[in-house]
Image (cartoon, rainbow, N blue to C red; front, side, top):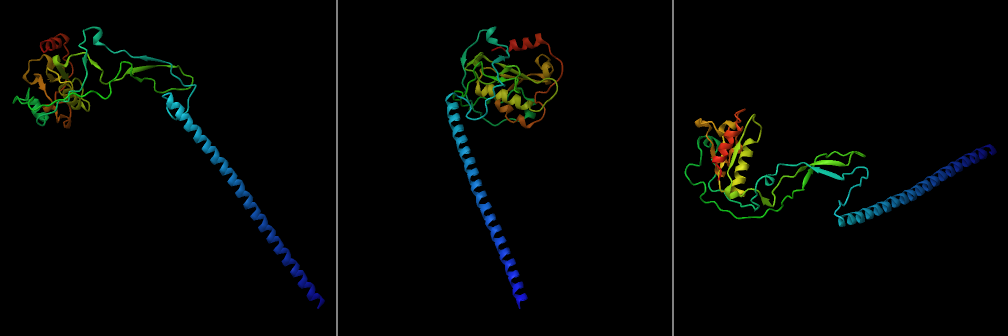
Length: 280
């Protein structure tokens, strides 16, 4: 009987020890998780405060930069700078010849009838029915943006730390405030030479339409056929064409060049003679 009681006491002692161990482990786990959560909350709160502080600094920096016409964001690099820009020079006709100094506006001359496709363009030297100028309406509109003489495109666009601080630049294309030529007295010639490249008909089309519709020139736009030889060769198939907006309206749907092209045939005296005869 005494032995049986002793075994029960031992079992009870083991059970109580196990319960105590489980309780201690549970308490330790709960304490650890609670402590870790507090630390995580403190850490996240610190990160959030730093984020809000950085955001406030960025907002104030952006506002200050805008007051000095600087970009609102981005890192200022102190080892990458440009302090000198050398603008490539272009041939300036006003330095050699008197300039008309005509105010540059868009005349917006609208088309009349729809265009004639390029097979007809090859067969005719003019519209033919004399109606190319009928029904044209125009109204003058100022340009939204005029380009000044010192607007440019940076040439050395790739910059590295501690490299030279100068760069070349290209003259920016675009409408200027004053025109050198008076559109009322302008004739123009378009010629395509050498090998073919994509988009030649688009170029012919846009030059013709721009001269007639935006600049409202008083003269003609001549399409020189067969390359430079078309300026002076008497062959019937090489006679210059009179290009009008109606005639070129759809030529961008065709391949190649509607004027034809060739290599050689460049004779400066004969070309100048053609241009002088067409002077308006």
